[in-house]
Image 1: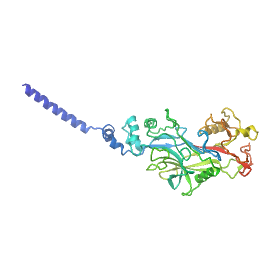
Image 2: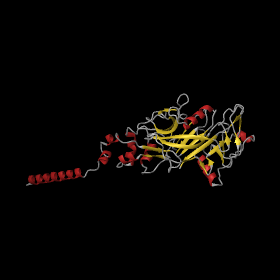
Image 3: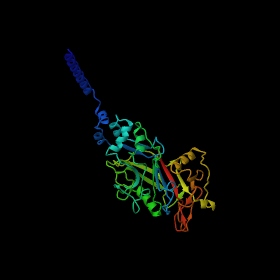
Image 4: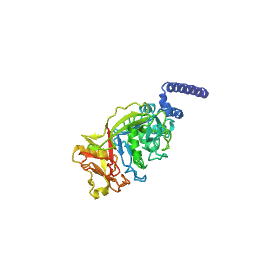
Amino acid sequence: MLSRLNLRHVLAGVFVSLILIFTFQNCSAPQEITSASSSSTGSYNQNLPFAYDAKIDTIAHMSCSNVGLMLPKRSYFTYRVGAYNNTTGGLTLTPAFRTATRYYGVAERAQALSASPLNAGTRLNLALRTQGNLDRVIQEGSLVVGQEIEALLPQLDSPAIAGPLAGLVSGQKMNYFPGNQSQRLMEASLRFYEYENIVKETRDRLSGSDSTTSAVLAISFSSTALESDTVLRRPIAGSGFKLQFGLRPGYASDERRILNSVTETDLASNGQVNSIWNCSFQGYPYAFKVVRPEDKADGLAVCNSYVDKWDTPAEEALLRAIRRVLRVEDWYVDLKNQCIMPRGTLDYCYGDLQGRTIQYYENAYGSASCATSSTTLCPHFVSVCIRQ
């Protein structure tokens, strides 16, 4: 009797087990869920699409030249780009990557960035790249990080970036990554200010159209985690910017030093992007002449050193534009005279004047004839364009 009961129990247990197995086999999770929660995750991650999409919303040009290379890098640059408003700029995940990892948790999605060959060890960098060969970076002598190429952020699959990035919802961008790393703001700068002719050459290349000599200001993704790596990750992704430069209103000069228009292109297709970039507000260009403190002290220039303030919407727009790229602890901003003056340095922007006198012309919009010669020098400017 006991043996028959045990056998019946065993047969019943086998029958129930078969039903459960059949039921779960026919109601199994989609392949993406299985892949993300089983040992097959690794092979699934090997085929994930490219993950990163980056947008900048500010481009600035500082025309300073003939100065040494040992300048405060936070204060001085030739080209500076950044994402300062997370509604118009920042880093996010591509729709294709988001779709492929839609069943992943935040931690699993963050880990997938370093496990995916297309995404691991990626840097987002800034460089002037030859229009006809994007792997070729415009450089003076040997390539120097912080001069001819610079990363906007730490390695993108690092925990400090990948964690917050993986937690973004669709349509969200991130431009500031909290933590103790030194590079939390999405910003980068290039510096060509050692020689006057080199700065001018970069402007000519950025405004030119010949594919062999002209350049684009490129925000792109490196093939390795090395910040000095100039080769782009394939397939190529990112944005290129053609820049045009002009004169300050009322000036006649042989040096077009003010950034006055931006054309954005898609590096993958080389097609123009339908974006709007403003370089002025109500007729006021986002352009500020650079005044030396010693010239103010000698009465050669007027530029007030007071706390930031504005009286009109135009002045507010000017201040907001320039403060994106110039820190309040480094520069005074005079909105009335539309000029800036360094707080803690002397004549770094102009270097050795070689006996020349700077023609400041206090009335920014009055008629003035300015020319660079053996005895005169036109003022330098910082100019800004902002994505709308």
